[in-house]
Image 1: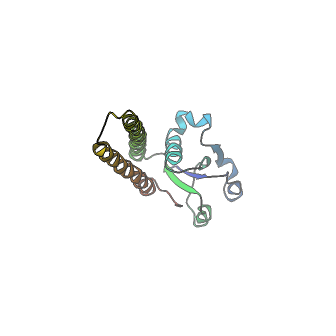
Image 2 (image 1 turned 120 degrees about the vertical axis):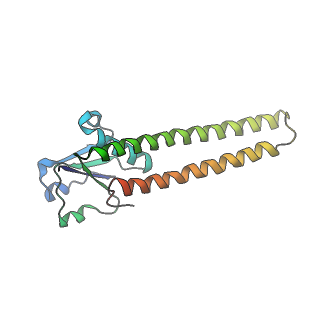
Image 3 (image 1 turned 60 degrees about the horizontal axis):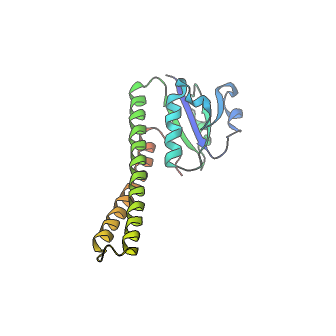
Length: 174
């Protein structure tokens, strides 16, 4: 079975080439065009998930033909997110694709929720200024409901981070 090690961090991990076979180590920016290649599809999905759920992890150190060894624990330092992908596990790759779709769908829903709240606030201010509403109790209740929904939506991002950790082999967590 062929495994790939993905290490995402704030900076490139230059010292890894000396620990592993240098020709199997690639250093790629997570926004690099090469990740759009179909051979990198699952790596791209992981990078998009990490960039969505975390901030600043835009440097990818990719180790192909990775073999787990005891000294590899030294690779997982604080501030590094590590994933091991089995390139032959089709089921896991479909699961990754489904997980990516769920996260991105939630991101879009969250954005729409925040935009709706913003529009409601503007309408409420406009109505108060034009004195078209005398009682602002109902709109204020609606705003509080939006706040609660947004809070719940934001807490789901924590659940997605944990699921990413549990499902896809995140080795080191912040």
